Image (cartoon, rainbow, N blue to C red):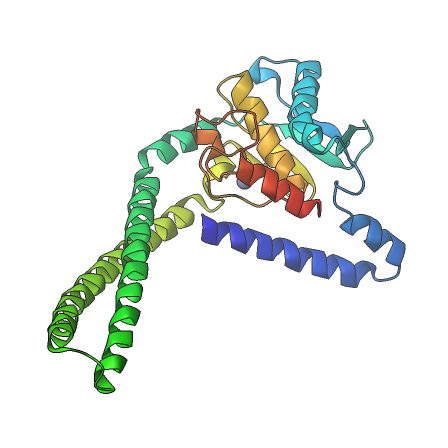
Length: 277
Ligand SMILES: [Zn+2]
């Protein structure tokens, strides 16, 4: 999904590029188009609204305001303004196929398990590698002294012991690297087949953001809906996904009920980055 996300982003760049070429004539217009909501509030209206979810349109509007304010409160700035005539639409779309997709998504969660294992191995490898590098440089310093003839017999014995241990650690390091790389291959394979199957990535199931709209397809409860809207409004601000799974902008936010509506440190850093703070 990370791969997919960057492809999606690439697609956005391409379409923005084409748009710029096509319009070309009005620099002002293009300037207006490229302003992020940090600089100029994004005006939105409610587009398609299916009543099967059991909430009213005014409730929905209220939830959008609440979601937007999660980001607005941080910088004490208005990012999103309701305007019934705005081109940017926020849609609530009822689609049974989405519910079926969510079920499939849950069974396919082997993907996040493999990702967790890979990250653990990667961290282990990096820790081992930095300790190993330190030992290598200590060894090399002593070796230089030895070559100058500056070491006592006891120190030479010590140096031989270091070399012996380093050799052992080199094979350990290589084994760790091999294990880590195997897991990476496995992860990429599963992620690829997942993306092939679902095309739009994991978050599509619940909600998605495009340049023109936000679509919400599915939610369990009020908090779930606000979280999905807050995540997609974050994308509308220009925010990318962040690593910490407890973040609003984590790519699996919708599937994680542990996420609170308070932005994590990673969310805040990303918001400040896009708003150039
Ligand atoms: Zn997202």
